[in-house]
Image (cartoon, rainbow, N blue to C red):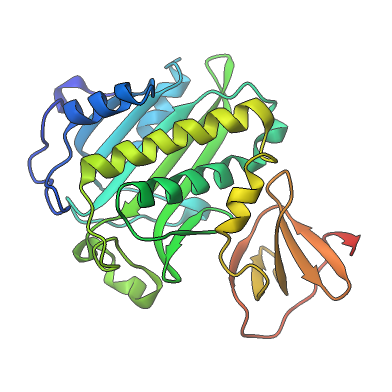
Length: 290
């Protein structure tokens, strides 16, 4: 569980590189309550990983709605074992506990749902226009602005999904090794207040999660497709045993990528996408006619 002695109900010391200064848990909680968002926010100055903390809380039986926000993570991580590197006070980083009632087999679209919500929340807070990159990133100007990690499973006798979100707010905190692949809200000319950003993103996540819970991803698919990076363009999907090149057609109702290959359509349930630029290695996958 979270160590209460490391939680803060006011402004966290050292947070303050956003446009409006440090993130305030009291103001954030008020904003969420006013929006009807039943989340319980806990702020941490420094943790190994918000994702690990919320996963542990889920295993201990924590109800849905726990949010752990950190100023700095020493072992932050993303999808496929990637690390999330940050400098204190330069990113919005949190993990959120959901307990969906849908069967686990229908959860493939949860990361897409979260990505859509994060992109909408960034804009609602005054940030840059954000696209969604299948399956788990938000882009601004073609560069990575935010990443999403969703880890699902069974804990304490019920299903759980822990949604980790990291959004670059100040360019000074972006890993220099990422070079032109990454960006931040201030670099895009849209500095944001951390409290407003957290409130807008969490409110958007709650709204889109409720819609997903009520009817699945189909109802959200048009909004996701409208933000889809590289829609209609040639992309390369990197897979464990090769890569596949084709036209980005959007996503299926279960969150699988729809890739146009020749005169057929390949459904890719998992992988990493980039703009096409090299030769493709064709591999077997679920294929349908077009």
